[in-house]
Image 1 (spheres, rainbow, N blue to C red):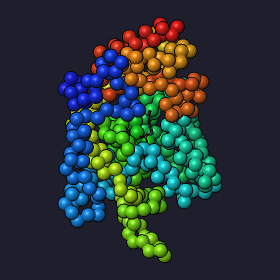
Image 2: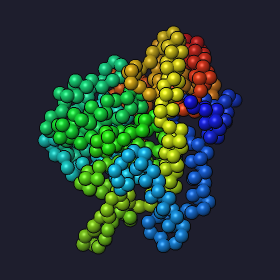
Image 3: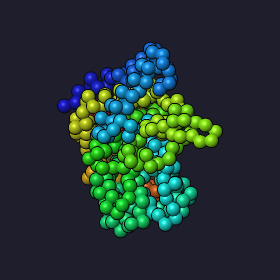
Image 4: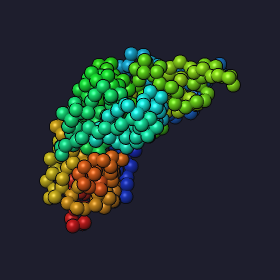
Amino acid sequence: MLDVAAIRNDFPILSREVNGYPLIYLDNAATSQTPQQVIDVIVDYYNSYNANIHRGVHTLSQEATDKYEEARKKIQAHFNAEKAHEIIFTSGTTHSINLVANGFASLLNSEDEVIVSALEHHSNIVPWQMLCEKTGALLKVIPMNEEGELVMSDYDNLLSDKTKLVFVNHISNALGTINPIEEIIKKAHHAGAAVLVDGAQACPHIKPDVQKLDVDFYVASAHKMYGPTGVGMLYGKEAWLNKLPPYQGGGEMIAEVTFKKTTYADLPHKFEAGTPNICGGIAFGAAVDYINNIGFDTISSYENELLNYATKNLLKIKGLRIYGNSKNKTSVISFNIGTLHPYDIGTILDKLGIAVRTGHHCAQPIMDFYKIPGTVRASFAFYNTFEEIDTLVYGVNKAALMLA
Ligand code: 7TS
């Protein structure tokens, strides 16, 4: 059982007011809030051992280096990567995907094909389109159905010995659908293709085991996992990371530099040019500790209850339609009411202190599929309560009446 009252005390921001009402934060899929335990780690870093890493003999630099590498090991353990150097710190999911897409530019040609899904965030579409423009490779799309699920029989037909890479999200940010990534990975490997899974939305809800999944690349952002912004991770199988060229050149990523020739550092440093987000990496480790202390079974069963309760009660509102009705979904509800504009509903909710996201959620192909400009999206975290959902339902009802 989750002690939600105690958990809420860990998040100072949850006790603030917005527009004279207690904040009800339901935009967790955009970014999650940060517990005091993680904020304390950030403050302690700047108060006690702020220094550049991997280069100083002095005590502060060594302390910072040790904590940063300790955080890498925590993240390795969390994702069950075989080796710590298979975890690359990045600025977030977008950076991680661009790093891999850039690397594949030297491995693909115009005979090759790559496969994306219809359910992706733009950051798992655009870098690959740029890759295809550079290499001439062909981009194919696994279609979706009305429920917001991937049409897996079409996936079978898209795969061939020309397929070099498949990139899909673990969970859709716009609809909450949990994609069958085990099956996607197995089939891709059978065809000889590598797979990148965008775990940005999955990692707050699920603990992925990269070895069990046998995934080639897995990417995530700390700020959706109760950590800070500006830091994230790329897991890559060692053999793949050795095969890909560096993404950025600079300090820290070299073995030796002369004007004739530069050789690159070993993993993970080859992909970590320049001074990284040191404090962010350490705080990411603390966020991983925080969510593991609660436990993913506890998190997912509570969030599922919130999802079911909110779905049932929102659907009582006349004209309200939920987009994304897969049986396998996480605590994200995307909805519209008739032809009311999502932005107007979101603005009225904000006046009541309720934070939701409105718009296309950086997933325009999904909106095009449903022929809508966007949705209102409420996304729940383990610190949300049933009472907050009652207030959301009250607010949405009120907005519908005001805008009718
Ligand atoms: N992939 C998915 C599935 C996402 O949901 C997001 C961000 C990203 C990639 C990009 O992550 P970033 O940390 O690099 O920005 N999704 C959202 C969202 O749904 N609302 O705001 C950001």
